[in-house]
Length: 624
Ligand code: XIL
Image (cartoon, rainbow, N blue to C red):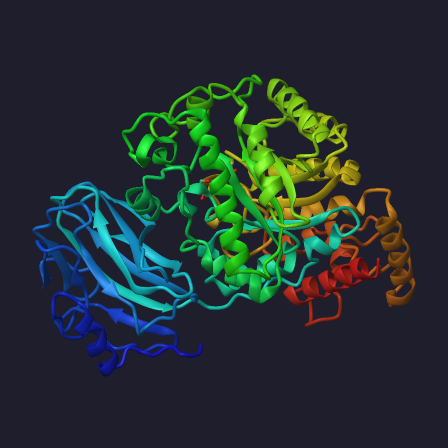
């Protein structure tokens, strides 16, 4: 790693000079990659307090390891706690891991969080991991990955507790460089589906700092990147600048925008030549109430539809202008112009603030109906860059009432030349909808003649056991079968993330890769799905497999790679072999299968054989 320093005494002194409470030293980094190691055994601490009340004491009352820990007492606010200043020790834009242990005298939630200042000087706070301390045992935060967006300064990690009166003990804290995990040597999704549609993913700026995550995303899904959060109105609208303009000239119709949050993603897109999908201009959610209120006051009256139309026009115009001005080479291939405007029954959302009552729409409060949709498309057409395609995007897009409303709206916008496509979010679950219901929606939207993009695909499962993941794999496979069937109408399939742990629905494991960057059964199932279709690539693979049969047979009866002994070599064999090597008790491989599985690596059947088999299959895919 370049530019990083181990925590030398000099660096530590520099760090400490920035902090409020003088502290002396900590154990200096010893192991490779370990940047900070604080066990408090020397009676000293590099942590400082976040507030003005709390007292930090190294104590031998309690310890996770050794005899000492750090006690934080006399907290007065939930955010009071110990913080670790990281400037000069870590690099913004790279990934690290923290391990620490916390304990409280009684039941409390203790959250490991991070703070940084962005390039515009705005301070951000984000939770990394919340844990429940039961008041008895130490609770571990082990190998927790974190990073700060490129360009960040004043970087801290810290602990806080929602109970402002609880004492917090912490111990055995280490911060180290996260190891780089090379993507597995398996076929790239985007190559496998090259004939049908592009494969993309949503990225959040927080993903950019992880080289392992980005290597995986780039290998499989970089043919359409959606900005997952930071182009939403909550991030783009600049309240201070909007108010300043209002105070200066009495004009409250020209909302000002800022790129402070999204800048790291724009820099990534510019430096890597990646086209972006803008998400999203007009939405009831992740949009502040003041945007819809007289004088931009949170508690003001809703503005008139006329005033809101001017605000909407200026918001869209200012957004397109600032992007073109600051990042002229970044291509926006698409924008989600309006997001989630219809209820499942096909009527407009209820009037109100989504920030007060989830699901309500301030747009409907102002307009009384969904007439703002067409206006939004008019302004997007007028101000979006040349060639940028405009989409309406929604979830539960297979519910019949909503589906019909979207269809009618899309046809009317199409007649006026205002829309290019429909975004099917596709936040699915293994229990609903059925793949057949989903396919009906594909059929309906395809009949508009507009482009379809699957914009936010993920599939949750309540059963996170191995069996649950197999069911999820089957479901993914059925959905991809439907997508292939309608592929003439679908230009891109975009996953809403890459690894389960970074997903917005992390606990129900909705994606194709796990937190260790390993492909899940769902990945193998959709690769496998391609093998069994009757389209061109299958025939190619089958033919080539026949060639392999003749060229690699070394003993009578052995078909190299045919682990399930069914006479052909495909991804099912690779899945079986991987599971066999992982000692998965649910699978058995016959004696003949084991002979076939010995691909010529080390003696016996090993991970090396699995890798050789995957390379062979990937090679066949590429040739196909
Ligand atoms: C989600 C993001 O993934 C979360 O990080 C955020 O907290 C909430 O929004 N439909 C959409 C997306 O159109 O913008 C939402 O993204 C998921 C549902």
